[in-house]
Image (tube, rainbow, N blue to C red; front, top):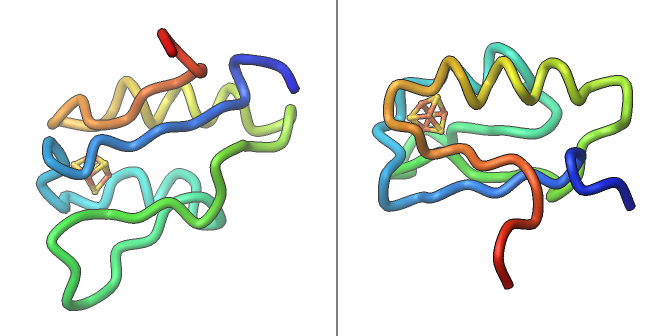
Length: 71
Ligand code: SF4
């Protein structure tokens, strides 16, 4: 597993803007009654690494993290 395909979401930071869902709808979802986005998967396809970078940059709440980070 390549580290940069790992996606994490800080649901406390998330403010439900939904930008991530528009970029990667098969990874992020924003259920109608949810207080935050949710992850449908914890890893993206290698082809989607650039889109994940874009989602990290685009999230106004800086709630998306790429890579496994410190354990
Ligand atoms: S773009 Fe950021 S703040 Fe908006 S729903 Fe996605 S994770 Fe949450």
